[in-house]
Length: 440
Image 1: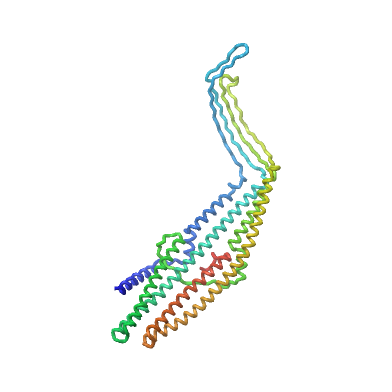
Image 2: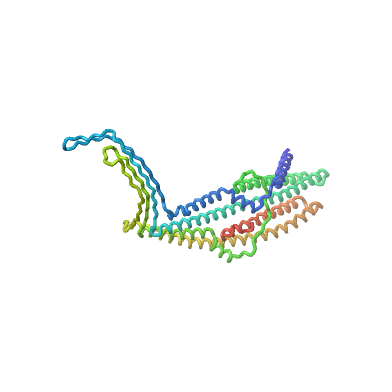
């Protein structure tokens, strides 16, 4: 009964696997395109870029004049009593008056000590920084996506290899049973073959489950339905003609982390000039057109008053001494700039270390890949000869099983090595600033 259940589960898993391979192929460039459109972190970074773009607009620069309009109506009703020295009395009851006013005013800063100029330049630099931050988010997410993508590819290949191993174990079990029925094998041979088949079945089911989990992980990173079915491209193409010197040079010029700190240095320079502008006189201009009318009550000798016309003026202000606040802000801005320069020097050194480490890791991964390839070739020859000898009865099932496991492990190790090498390569290219141009 146990054997029947395992066989049924295996058949079901095989059907699922075949159905999965029949699904649409998710090629690598398509995965990047889907991520750029749907990945949640990339979407948030894109919104931040849009915010920075709005802040860097001419509408937020202070270079445009301001225009204000106003209008008002006032109504009054009151009584008054006035008694003259000669005894006469002037008294009014419920005297009503109305007043109307309106104006349209234009204000413009002619000169503000260049603070407006540097603030506008600073906002543009912040916008550039936000674009670099988005690029950083994209690079890190693309790197994560391909870690999972290649994990799906690795498990896909492992599933194929394990399926072949399972088929061999199944044939071995059938052979052991036939041999037992005809008196050529013992019950122990059958039990050993059955145990190995069951273990291979469990391993196969585990790989299937890991593969489905990895696909769901990739769907989350792509920002789409987690249950979307797909298959992946298991081929690997490695970059050619890359050297440590070239990567180091490109990293110092294009690494997004270094570019971000350089942007912070430039922003700090603008902050110094913005604060210095507080020491320089400010010149403002204003112009307005006003219209006022008042309808007087009966006690006034004039029935109404009206005045209207344009007005204009300029004003000069100078913060001669503010208790040292502006000077302190300038000094603090300079210290912040110096800190950014120190951070830049530190991160350049860290980047140099990281590139060297990543290069060494990549070279080691390539060496392991070459060694595992040779090991796989050796084990392939060994399993072919062992299978032939086993079928001829020249070796027993235990010896054949050892060769089978060696070949399976060699396959798994080679499969792991080739994807590890590619991930190491992508990590190296990310440090150099060329991940998005990589041959995925």
